[in-house]
Image (cartoon, rainbow, N blue to C red; front, side, top):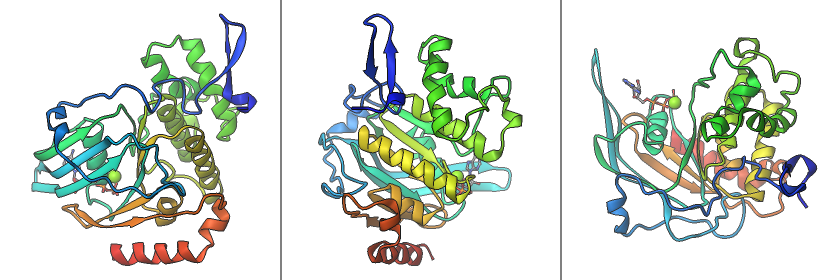
Length: 304
Ligand SMILES: Nc1ncnc2c1ncn2[C@@H]1O[C@H](COP(=O)(O)OP(=O)(O)OP(=O)(O)O)[C@@H](O)[C@H]1O
Ligand SMILES: [Mg+2]
């Protein structure tokens, strides 16, 4: 039985119906959304999976949600050409949770822009089969809207009436420690609050592929832990595919089933770590386990 705050009132049937913790958009089993490169879809790919256990357990539909093959991106700048990504390969299974960790400037945000379709690659194939909810590194909140109406923006953009969109966002303000700030303007919020509003807006789209760029980087350790817990519970209740960019190796090992480590620019895959977190282990038990500290050492060594 879903929790009370996860219900919404259905005016027509006069009954309460459970709603997604991510909003009421597309379910993960929504129709495939072929990208312009869908012609390449028949290419056979091998998808790394990590079985039935732990945070990375997936609902395997057999079709990768994301496939990047030999991708390169360069930017022309006043001081010359900067190659952000070169020969970058990554396949993400449907429902898989992948974290990307790498040094500053190695192309992580560029990678998310590619996946979200905001940037075309200069070379290679970008094949994304799911609708993407992108949370950019900068929060991009709209200054003339209140916090609540910023959070509701994605739902309004999907055609939901303003009041209904705000009502969907409101319970998450409570849940994310933002109660009382619904009507605050963006400049009245702290950096961490702004980040939570932007996160809220992203997940409320209900889209099946979450592309999150340092979503919790501005938060203190306690709030970050609470957000991790919320996300883990939400993903357990309703699996989504997730591509999470983070500088925090512990965050990656807590939230993802696979951690992809990147080289310095031009960014390539330096290595991967499969995270086999046993089911039923709490966050605290997991992050203090011997296995966790071994994985953390491996990741840090690979990043050096
Ligand atoms: N629009 C752009 N124009 C010019 N150069 C860019 C542009 N976007 C990114 N770059 C360059 O591409 C490289 C990769 O940038 P990107 O933002 O992807 O790095 P990142 O891994 O996300 O870094 P960080 O961890 O600091 O956020 C950097 O050298 C950056 O200066
Ligand atoms: Mg970045």
